[in-house]
Image (cartoon, helix red, strand yellow):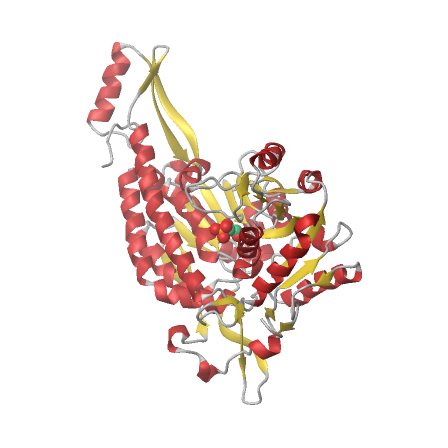
Length: 541
Ligand code: G3H
């Protein structure tokens, strides 16, 4: 990448290729409550795209691509009361429905969702600036997650379709739903991370109110009707608007049983504190992280550079799992930094639909200024930008900045940048990065780079009790989705993976009876004559 002005410019409207076109503005007024798409005639909020359009004079400004409802507290409470009625104290149609029938609803939804792929992909590009390749990956990964969830539910159900006997007691043990789940995903994976809580919560018999993230909202529009058609009334409800106005009343009502939230620990703390019955509320949270890479002196430098590049700059560094601080041993720091800067220079800046694009516009308003302030703070304390053009910005585009040497006095050492800045810290003693991880308020993952088994083992043992995944000579990442994804300290609560998510949205519940002739005959009658959906030995094939 040379200087930003030489390599990038926002398009004019007539330069948008067919494969990226959207008929905007999209004025979405519908929201889903109690199985019906209601129309909101109140205030709307504009949706601005990070992809600016140039006018005839060449001036580029954010593109208004539509608007979404800005619901008030009353509308949000009617979404909640639809969910509460559908739950009906656990006696509703959905929580008591045989699992095979629930799966059939989810399969119906998935068919309808797949039909909307192209539209959702285009909205991902326009709303959050994600490249077409990554937008397609997000959509396909989500569909695969749903299909894997369906398989995992069948496996779980088969394992529970029998009685256990111990100490003269028969019991059937199942996972039962918890109630009303409030789901809120993040803007960087608006579809995937919303659905990796919403889908398992639903399929296990809970009812859901979900709020799309603050950015990446219109893309849920094409799916609302599919939710309404596939599930019984009140099982899926949506709310749109300002968190303080619509989420606070929901939390304060005490009717939310599970908060599934991916975002900042600051917001999670506010929401948790609003709930009047803290022991009723289960929290499933994916929060802040500052995952470090520790590159030892004997690491394969080329491999480490490639993995750290992917880890720190995929989707412009806007991943909770991104590598946000690189500790590099002083003996190879110079070589590493030079190669890293050269690799960053190869990354193409462009629009989400450009082939091979790696650096795209950032969707958060004011983000480039906040990133610049972090860089300036580091520069004022002795660091420098080591890649040509790093840190330059044009509207919503920020050229990745590789900042070296970063020290504990700089904000970049501690703060989660969640964007395209790569801070590199030279170190002499491997205990330095270990002390950093121990002292950090975060505890999600770390990456270790070395070719020496002894040195790696020496780092693995102290770090496994500080973070929840160590990646050897590999970037940090969430996937594959069958692996547990969680964190310690302020990074997470609860564990998500295809199978863990089924557990986290349920509670083990059993029906037990002392072994005697009366109870045997009762259990036999209930199961043979299919009198109960919980107490059942039916088997899903
Ligand atoms: O933003 C956090 C995501 O869960 C990261 O997922 O590691 O697969 O990109 P990923």
